[in-house]
Each structure stands twice: as C-alpha cells, then as structure tokens.
Image (cartoon, rainbow, N blue to C red; front, side, top):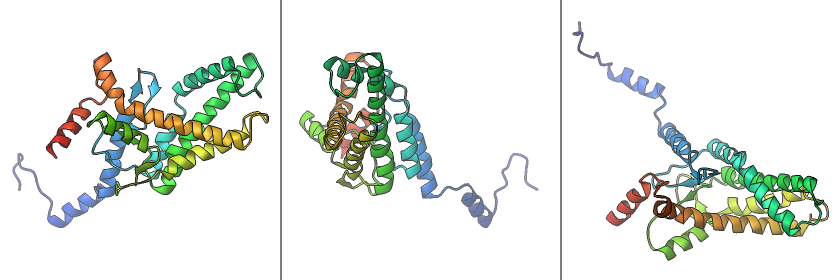
Length: 250
C-alpha cells in the first residue's frame, strides 16, 4: 500500500492513454495558443475606441484555423466603433456632396452611414475571413517593431500585396486582400444608388479600400512608438522590447 503522502504513478500504457485523451497533439496545442493570442488581440483598441483586432505584436504568433479567422473577422466587422467611423465618413461625404445618388438631408445621411458601414463589413469579412480561409493565408498585420524607419515603412506598405502562408510562414502574394477589396467593391453595386453604381464604383471602392489598408498598415507599424512617446503607454506590453532584443541577439 502506498503511503498517504506518495502519489501513485500509472504504468506506461495507462499514462500514454491518458495523454492521448487530453488531446495534447501539436494541432491541439497550436489551436489553444492561437485562442490565447486572439483574446489578446481582441483587447487592442486605438485611443480606447477603434478596434485593432487584426494586428499581432507577437514574434511567436501561430497560424489561425479557418474558423478562427472567420470568428475574428466577424468580431471586427460588427464592432460598434465601425458605425462611428461610418458616420464620420458619411458626414464628410454629405458635406462634400459626393455620391450624388443619395438625397440631401437626414434620410440621405442615414443611407450614407448604412452603405459606408456595409463597405467596412464586406471588406473585413471577405478580406480577413473568407478568402484567407480559402487560400490558407494569415490575414493579420505582423508588426516589425524594430529597425530603421525606412525599412519599417517599406515593410508596412508591402503587406498590402504580400502576406504569410499558414503554418509555413513563407511570404507570398496577398490574394486574400486583393480579391477581398475587389469583391467588396463589386458588392457595393448591390446597395449604392443606381446613379453611383457600375464598374467605376467597383474599381473606385476597391482602390479606396486598398489605399486605406496601406495607410492602416503604416499607422499600425508606428502607432506603438507614438503611443509610448506621447501617451506614455505601451500597447505591446513589452513585446516590442522583447522583439528588438531578440533581433539584436540574432
């Protein structure tokens, strides 16, 4: 009989069986780690308002499953802050009297807010969820976080057209982003006024979303630097410093 203060160890076959039952396979471990990193990303907001879920500050970020990509994309697409952004963009459009197919006044402004929100929703779900799941590409922006300003700027701009492939981590053409932008531009024809729809709307909205994505990547690359200097807050919670130290060691 074992003493009360001693643990009774199972034999080797039983231990192996127990290990298998817990699901500790490499795939299960990666899925768990990805879930933890997604939860970190879902806490990221710019100025405490605008969602910043699709940026990773981690050098050890693992690939997401198709389901995780879709969930993260939908979480970002339905975030209430998108309505605020859509309202601001619609207000500018109302003041500039762009998209002449919309009526003037409260009703026209409401319609503008609706279509601008749909533009964001379509682009996010398609470019960050559906196409990345189909092409097995990672939709997130991975900050460089160190190096010269010129190198980081060029890197941020390049991510509009290149991205990491799942698991292998190799860089390849960003089909997901480009097709997502074009497709969301085409979908705009379904809900924009007839006077504003057509091939021009498809190309125009696609180019606008692409330009916004490039500008967003540049902002994401340098935002933590600005935040630390101006607001004395580190959005990366020390991950930038760790990445720089690792790069210096290499």
